[in-house]
Amino acid sequence: MSALLEQFSLGGRDAASPTIVIKDSIDIAGYRTTGASRALADVAPAQRHAEVVQRLLDGGWKIVGKANMHELAFGMTGMNEYTGTPVNPQDATRIPGGSSSGSAVAVGARLADAALGTDTGGSIRGPAACCGVIGLKPTFGRVSRVGAAPAHSTLDCVGPFAREMRVIVAAMSAISPAFDLGVAEGGAGAARVGIVQAEARPEISEAVELAIRKADFASAYVNLPGLADAFNAGLSIINRETSVAFGQLVETGHLQPDLAARLRAAAKTSDLDVENAERVRTRFTQAVNHALETVDVLVMPTLPDFPITLEQARNGTSVIAMSSLIRPFNLSGHPALSLPVTVKGTALKAGLQIIGRHGADELVCAVASRIESALAA
Image (tube, rainbow, N blue to C red; front, top):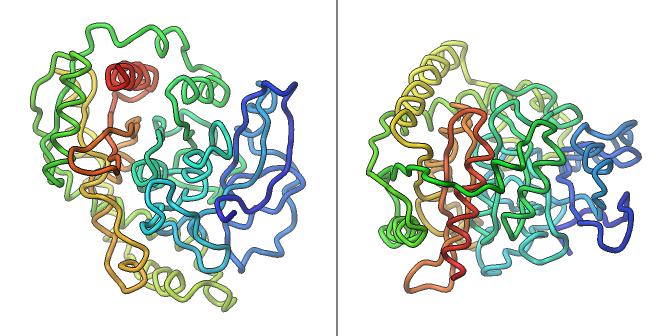
């Protein structure tokens, strides 16, 4: 059962307690936080719970295991030759997406009601779209990262996966103390939706627009400049921060070869690269804020295409473009949620991405709930 690295039962007041699994980059007291890496297999067990874990336990959730992941959260395929690759519940021949692969698969395979993952460059929304479940990257800083690895990041967010929006809302209310249930559950009201015309498979773009029409939102097409620049800038910052956090592990000889190679390349990220990326961050954040002045949320595909097959990934097919529509919103820090939608002509579901204003995580959830209800009707 490669979706989980360990199974156990922690917390929960009774049999009706909601169940959740925790990505292996988030501390659970008494368990090793290994990042699904041989290089950290012998690390000392965590002495205390991450803040989000403690909040879940205090809220009556039952933790039923640690979720597998792409090694050290540095990859988009979700494949892991050391701990095993979680099986995509939509199509076992396709990658589950990374880095929170085990979290998405555990939810899709109904091993738990929910899961926690982390999202530095799309690592919640990408696997959610691959596996046909819901995944939310909160506003940067909205949810505590104390006890999550890496310890320092200007991009990474802890957030939930679930099969239903009501569970996403319940999880957010547990891990984010200021989360306003009244707004999240109060309906999207007269929310205005901006449809971003992005480069994606036509059938997926059509599914996104159809979902908005079914939910009867007032909508308009919105231009969002700078996506490509933000994608590249995000990669520069991810490379620098991941190299600082984990680069020293290359010398252990215990990393998978592809990861070691990427960490060596990441170490070459220059100060100038980072300075340029920060300038792009400022411009793109302003562009998103400007777009959200005339609409309440933006929508677009989560991924530009369906996930590639495991065979393609093993044969070297690049997945770098997989995060072209999700990584930019790590750079800008806006909340972004991936909701599964049916696509004409295939049994595979794709992701509809909803992006909101900074701090408006509740409205993003409300819009997603309305679309969910419309699609279920």
